[in-house]
Length: 69
Image (cartoon, rainbow, N blue to C red; front, top):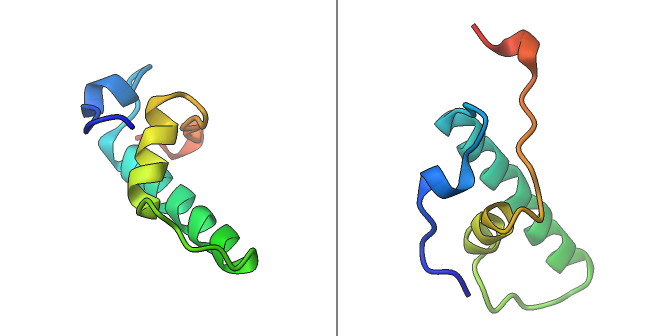
């Protein structure tokens, strides 16, 4: 279990904090939905799992360059 990874450890390539928040929220919803579908009880909160997965590079943040201002 990772203890509170810093934002700078998770973000790279000039990714925005907003992108991180959106990515964590989307992944947490996926984790929650998977648990509901499989009728599993989660031991770890979905947001914590999502942050750890992004910090461990199990999932990546992909920004749409067209949306950058």
